Image (cartoon, rainbow over all chains, first blue to last red; front, side):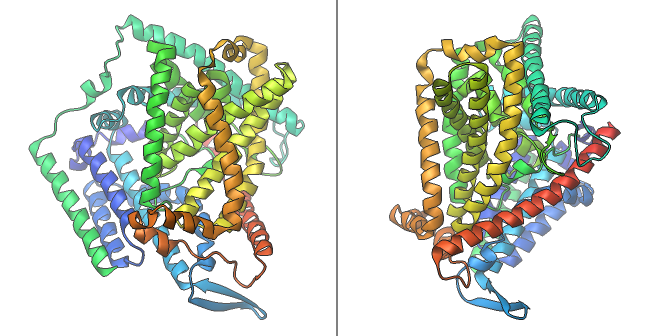
Length: 265
Length: 325
């Protein structure tokens, strides 16, 4: 919810229609991923573009960096191509007697995967930070994501924080019954006992939420719930002309950078 | 703000940049088609009740992924939840719930990319659910519907859903040319064989609780007409296919290249394919079998060390976070 609070700042990027932001960010990510490897200059331009928007939106870059770092460990999955890419190889000696072959193409590919991944994550973070979730869901509906599905996830989002508190309470209850010994590396009880405890909590959470959904449903019915998406009516508005213009310019800029990348690549 | 709750299953949330655009789009299309079908099926089953039930349960599974329990030393088991959702709700509602969970993770927490979301949905929501469903039902038939039969079938369903989903994830990475098959497949499989045990144990624990508190939820599936036969078959086929395809791909990595050429993928994804799929040979080892095993072992060790280190760190972060709240 903290995110939502931040969004009330008076700022052009925050106030922009969520549809514009969603389409722009999706295209940005697609074209970054379509850019050939070794087009470092193009990657730099994408980065400049993104940084400019972040600057206009007045977001602290450290927030974005923090979120990026969380997704970074996945890069391990790409480490092997450093060694297994095509020839030519570059040989390095680590300790006398043991040599390691680095494939030059592999290294280039690894770097470009890392760059693409970082650029895409930062673009996605930008979208999340500058767009209130209800608006984002409404925007999804207007780009034809099934309405039923959007209703489900916007309801889920609304209950996320309640469920989070429920889990925290369950955890606290478990802790207060000494499920953890003072030495954090060990817990009370055998592995199966611990699993059964955690499983019991999960089953409990599940049953409670099934019951809760019944109450939610009656509450919705009593307030005149019908299947029509309330989301979109409340949170979406038609595009202003200048917003269309901004979207158009944004897409053109992405295309220019991409064409440039194809030319130099 | 909810902390990104877990690290282990992060290996299944593929971020953007790792899948080629072509592969991403194929899995987007597959996932959308199956999601539409799932929405239609749940609609028949639950009607108006669908939105609140699916929504609240998706939130519960998302939050439930914060639950952890110590496995060995500092590592902790977490959960994906696909198996439990499938067993308690039936396959199609579980697909909707899991898709919502995975989408929220990508949209709100950048846990998994937006372009890669289609593939992530396919792995966790569709493969996860289908595989759990068929494994659970097959073993339930073999073991009987006694308490221990349910517990063991639940364990196996959860374990195999994690393993098979990770194989799919590894294959997607391979086809995209991000990781060589002979390293990423054994490494992914190795690490998820272990992670799956955590998932299996916690799912069994939950099933024991549910069968004590609300036995009717577990037997609801029995009375349901056999309309889920498609899922049963689909799940079994997916399991068998991935179980056979993965070792094949990791021992004959050129096979993938050949398939790619034959089916004309290369024309569609020129850049991606012939440039990116390398000739897999672990440097300096000539025997391919030994090379594969060595690669697998090295990969698994690297991954394990990193997971171990990070989950330790994550755990303390989580402790602090709970204290702050």
